[in-house]
Amino acid sequence: MKRLTPADLDPRSVYFLMTSLVVPRPIAWVSTVSSTGKCNLAPYSHFNNCSANPPIVQFVSNGEKDTLRNVKATGEFVVNVVSDHLKQAMRITAANWPSDVDEFKIAGLEQARSSMVAPPRVASARAALECRVRQILPMGEGNMVFGDVLCFHVSPNILVDGRIDSELLQPVGKLAGANYSTVHRVERLDLPVDHAKAVADYGASWGNAASQPPAIA
Ligand SMILES: Cc1cc2nc3c(=O)[nH]c(=O)nc-3n(C[C@H](O)[C@H](O)[C@H](O)COP(=O)(O)O)c2cc1C
Image (tube, rainbow, N blue to C red; front, side, top):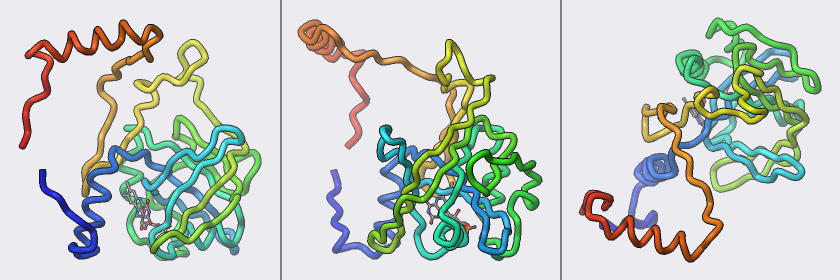
């Protein structure tokens, strides 16, 4: 194992370690409107859930960007989920477009009206979360934007027995550099109910040479 300490590295190397090792990251495709009513759409993979009750999500703007300016000005945003069929459009919206450019138009995306906030949704997204800004917290050189989820939009086409099916949602994840993960195989791992049996099964499977992971120095 190689040991690396941030203090001994240049900031760019630390950035590459952070973004290569905290993976795969879900992508919030954030739509906002500016104080003058211009629509904006951009991907943010420093994104996650903070709380389920009440439902709160968070994304990080590294530096002052249009999305951050817009959420500061209006207090609203929508997180659109990036499914596989949307990855090329998502990529286009990530370019550093001038503030007066509407990335929906640039990427040829149809808008759907949101029900509780002004920013529109990506009509072809299979799921979206309408959010109201709860707090914006400066953190290092980033700004964490926390939002209360006011409502969820879920396509009926991704529901199986009333639950969201990951293979139908086809979420795209962010990996190192320009690499992404897509969902090709979903594996189910139920939590153990019988702990003693779980430990015995685990021991048995790891005692089997065929199930050992390949050794990597
Ligand atoms: C998949 C992906 C994820 C990204 N995640 C982030 C992120 O978490 N934070 C960030 O500041 N920029 C991120 N970016 C870069 C922004 O999308 C990019 O700077 C964009 O131009 C910002 O647009 P805006 O100024 O309209 O907000 C990401 C780009 C891509 C392609």
